[in-house]
Image 1 (tube, helix red, strand yellow):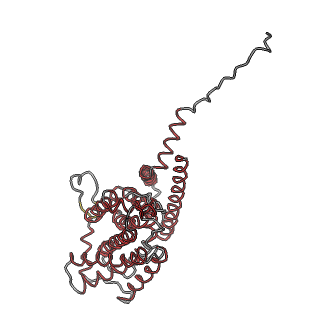
Image 2: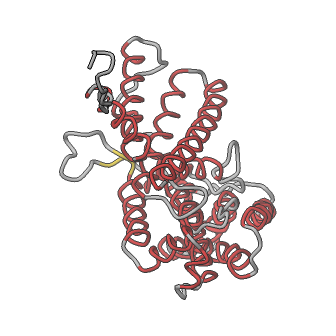
Image 3: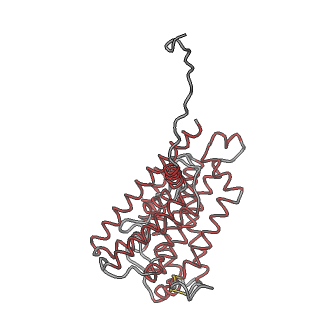
Length: 367
């Protein structure tokens, strides 16, 4: 047998594995893009480091200091709360959204002003009435969407117009800024943080009295209660939820009631913060509705429903708040307001792209 006639045996040769460094980088990138909380923490650190170097290089109008950031948390509280309210209605699925939260804040603010300044109700009673009023306005949305099955976009857009118009009509578009209302600024004063007061700057009081209780209650309702499990099930698969004997209308109705209740409490915070009950508290300028939706989506709440965590919403609200704080120091007032809107739109687009990537990545894994 010649060499040319010798039998040839094919041998399977495994391709060389990719370098370990590349595998680790790919896994890290995939982890950041699929774990929204981890990504938000990284973005928050990058933001703080970037503005710190800008501050050190004298590129800012004022120092980007820890005390400045702590004071700016006053704007973090209302945007977080409204975003949590949006999270409840969006997680419930079927295009859930609440475009009326800005109008609710405006209407409840002016009614709260009447109750406390003109009718001389005790503060605690006026606060409870504000939350109850917000719940009633939310119940109107819940009735239209959960019971009458009107699309949420149409229903809440209509009630947004109605609530805003009522707020403007009640007090002839004039603010309520009596001495008693102005005294409410004491509810938003800066206070020392318990246990670590000497290590960190003072923070606005509403962070402790409003943000923390709201975050804890929202976390419990979404992640530890029977209602939360039903809400996630409804947003994930409404047909399966019906077969599981979940009352779809009742669950969605409750979500809008919760959103309205939170908006009513935000109205009180806004009145105290600005020492005035204004008829456009939630709709002036860029309003409160679109920033709240942006924060909810950026925080990992899937617009299709069934996905979202309170921790992600809190980190997204903090990111947006401190980004606005940095932009305010980087440009003058007229430019900064425009760039804040631009940055908000960019963040919303980023959140939408991330949600698309995550959904495609999940389908690829399942297949």
